[in-house]
Length: 117
Image 1: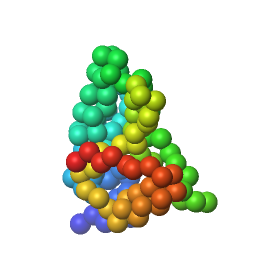
Image 2 (image 1 turned 60 degrees about the horizontal axis):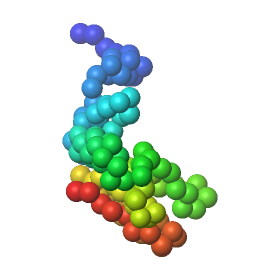
Image 3 (image 1 turned 180 degrees about the vertical axis):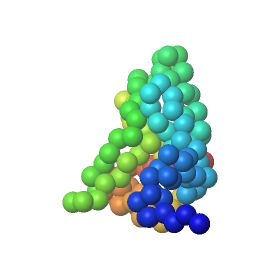
């Protein structure tokens, strides 16, 4: 019977595809990696809206500082033709951490996060 050290086991499992905690599979589109197929699909829809000149632009994964050492990373920020911007989070599952950060974000910036479920 063969015995492995912890290091041997880690080296063995590093090459394996690990299941996501929330069963979402990472997806790559245009060199960007998304946490889920739903998020990748939303990105593709935004690209089409940009080409159709329905929106002025969008940004992937903008980071907002909520407090020293506490940040929130949204999935997208969309820049609309009317000059307004919209912070978007594509959600399959809302963690307690996300719910708390959402409240702090909305209070601090006086903006609502649009959730795509």
